[in-house]
Image (cartoon, rainbow over all chains, first blue to last red; front, side, top):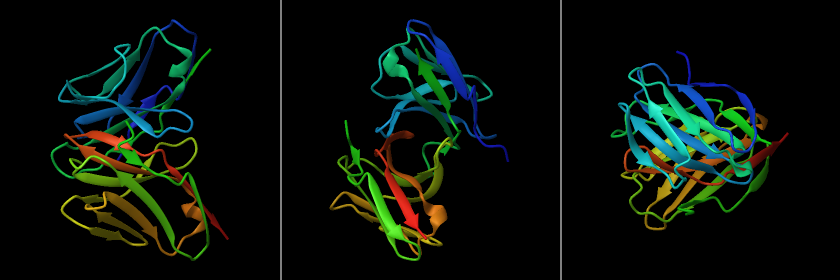
Length: 114
Length: 111
């Protein structure tokens, strides 16, 4: 069974640009969550999508947005990039939120802002 | 908001001995707790979990203990193996998949 796939693996951008990251969940998983990991920090929750709707949102500015498609694939967009946005962005999928199902992570997209 | 805390950034143990990783949380609404293991350049891998209605869950060499009154979670690895060397994250969930993670503990198991 294929795992969570994130593309691209690495990305270099400059300040002020925007970026779109992609996540394909495990087949059958309808919940997709996004996290930001920076050095010395744990994983910071960005948002979660379920059935094409944002169900939960973390404490990030509006520059961070996302969406989910009917096939459960998800994209995350960051506009007006800042140096502090350099991080590992992780996507996780799970079967559903109401039961005790763990999230399964992809290997992430490493975003570097110059 | 540090709702989930792992106060030990690192832990070193000898092969064959027990590894105990600790985690504290502040939000009593968390209903599901998980441990993940992370190797460099890879995403976190799910290890073991426990729901808030239990106080212990065991899976092979891994056991998770939950003390709700103390808002404390621990992961025991017995016996520890060099391949267990990784960063371990504690996570807690409430409100569907709204998850909070600790900052991680780097475990080193020495041969």
